[in-house]
Amino acid sequence: MVEIPRSHPRYWSLVLRERVVEAMRGGVVVPEGLIAHGRGECFDYLLGEETRGFALEAARAAVALLLLARRPVISVNGNAAALAARDLVRLADTVGAVLEVNLFYRSEERARRIRDLLLASGAREVVGVEDAVVPVPGLEHARGRVSPRGIAAADVVMVALEDGDRTEALRRWGKKVIAVDLNPLSRTARAADVTIVDNIVRIVPRMVEMAGEMRTWPRGRLEAVVAGYDNRRVLAESLRFISRRLEGLAASEGLLVGP
Image (cartoon, rainbow, N blue to C red):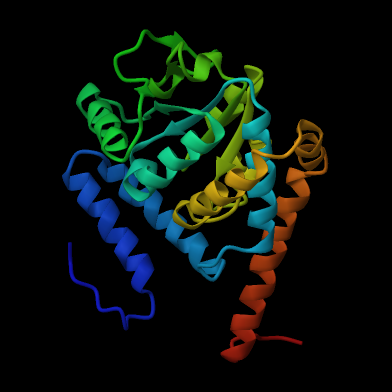
């Protein structure tokens, strides 16, 4: 990796960028994943590269939903594995979820590489690589191939850095969907039951902490968290925050025009 001085004002953003590039060279991420990462960087910049209150509220609801699930599954693609493999494994262990490799740009070699990365990060089992295939109704591309031991049997699916059509298809299939998505206007964000507008590298460790505490809660308390959550309101809060922050930045630089 390129050596980045810690004095750089956007040090961590550049570190993550290099991590994704290295994962591409190692066959975990495809070139198209670099484009997706850059798009996420843009939205993270608008958020100030910090975890905000609306993201923590959504994360709490997501953890409650995972803990209440009969069979929770965490779907992992190349970018998610490159950025947060160890923390996704920790979250799966804490909430009792299955890890499944699921890819849009799929090759069996790449799927095996991601599985091996998750296993090297502490996972005991990863499905979705050499399993039988169950088709997701309404999806024709490779992401419509899921494991009968994973997403096909799941009642709650957590997806990170996801495409919108699969989120919509999973909802139609009767699954509850948790999304981690830096873009609050994406189809994924709008289609999911719970959308966490934050960077995966910041929010998943926080979810692990939350899960460690919340798994001792009685079921009724977890159900109350889920019942009190409104995804549309949380998405609206994230958009208001971005709007206010942009106005503030523009005003501080004297860039606002008009009355």
